Image 1 (spheres, rainbow, N blue to C red):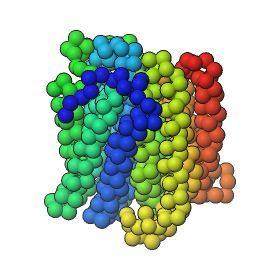
Image 2: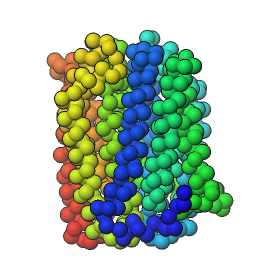
Image 3: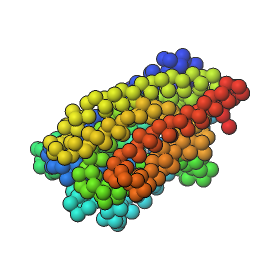
Image 4: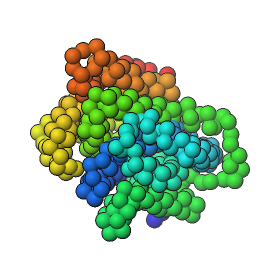
Length: 455
């Protein structure tokens, strides 16, 4: 298992071949992660019950908030790292990587402390009720121990991806997902640990992924290296990481805020059935969404490296291909959600009321899913070039600027009631698509005219 000597192929290899070779391992890793999310919920639903599935739906947005911090560092690091490698500045690449790990450790410790002391308040804040709280607390308290492991695994995967070693990035993700799938039934059905067993499966699998990634870097098989002289935090380097990665944080934080507001609204308008339907549908949608993110993970190092190497034509080529691939995946999601919603929902539950409501929700949420590809590519494009403000705007546009206000306004000021929450999703998807298309179209033509990346 030998890492490449350098990352120069990112600036020389044919774009078609390059995007495919970088995206396919990421696609596989994201697909397996999506399957894990589905299988995990199925195991919990069959082994513990419907309330446990609802409890996971409550904890999930809190975990998404923790992931937001991890992705802020990992995506910011990956962008800066690829641009440094493109500019042939390996010393700065090592400094960025080392500082990113230090920053991740600090943030993880702080999040664990906050989680232990404010667990009940967090769970109720994110929509739990008296029926769900016992299961949610069992799952949440064990899951706290996964915070640093998940963050380090995400960072390592981003570092490997940034230097062009997408296969090792894939292996890091696969270790976490596959061990989780294997340990879930063992802990839930064999050891009879219930929902805590599912949480322990996550902790152990993420710890194994972290151990693998650290071994790979510390054994000098990675292009970048840890250096003791860079262990002391550098404010300028950390600021550059956070400024670019903040768009990823904002997107995930907006997802958590959106879940908080949505869960509170659903709790008031629809009760436990609506909450559980929403959590179940989110798991299914992740199966289609994560492969799209896999394509974007292949796009990022190519665009960032060629930005540093001053090759804008290659940036245009890779963005065009990424748009085609992600739109195709989104279209498959839309068609599947429209034609086979009952089949997907019945994997999780036999409850007739839940199946009926979740089927309706799934169809609406996947109606304009074919537009998600362009939205994510536009955001990744600006992240890759280190343009913090446009990346931030595009990252929070759909959920924070459009979707959250609609969820608050439609049930209150129309006669739709609970359905107002569900109709907010396709409206926000299509509106965000139009705005992102306009922004990306302008950036595309600017690149074409100036022969230099967007400012």
